[in-house]
Amino acid sequence: MPIYQDSRNKIHETALQIMYSFLIMERLNLEIDFIDTLENMTGADYPEIDIFLKEILLKSLKYQSEAVSICEEKLNNWKFKRLNLCIQAIFILSFVHYKYMEDVDKAVIINIAVKLAKKYGDSTDYKYVNAVLDKALDD
Image (tube, rainbow, N blue to C red):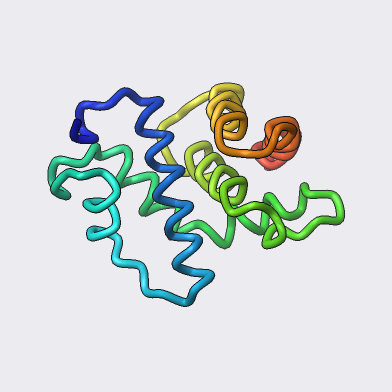
């Protein structure tokens, strides 16, 4: 099923998977081909891909260093780069969604992040995601 027909929850999940791929590419010092990656990961041609998905991923790449910096301040003696890449992707997407996308309540953003962390993280990661985002999204 093409991504443009998916629910918002599925789009958030797809955004996480693609952001995770971007983080892997960065770690391997590979060039990110934005359009090609989106088309390959969604199975849809770029014009058909949901505008929200494209926008949150573009902004996540643009504001990634800001998101990492703000979240790292709230990690309590932990380095962002030491976090699981999936959790890193959740933090980046959540920060960008809250700060640079549509006006969405902080609790909604955290709820989305917690759901993703429960599905893709370790058993207690969701608690950590909840606590860090609660502080990071206040800045």
